[in-house]
Length: 88
Image (cartoon, rainbow, N blue to C red; front, side, top):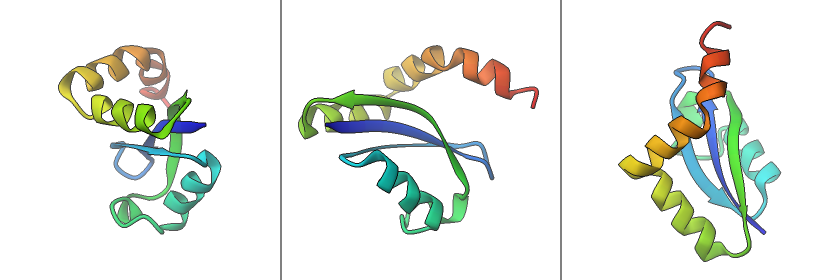
């Protein structure tokens, strides 16, 4: 299995979208600062993920999430999360 995921920085509330074959290990890399593009935005929380049967599907899903329409999809999909987290 491969996973497409969205993590949110607890520092600046910005999202990072990626894909991996080992979700737990990848999240640990983000939290330890081992990922160059996210090391200054730690800590993170996982807010969304999807499982895919192969790497190409996960990669395509990641690319889609990074488009305007993909971000709109995630905003709708995570509407309940954003409503709940706005008042913490």
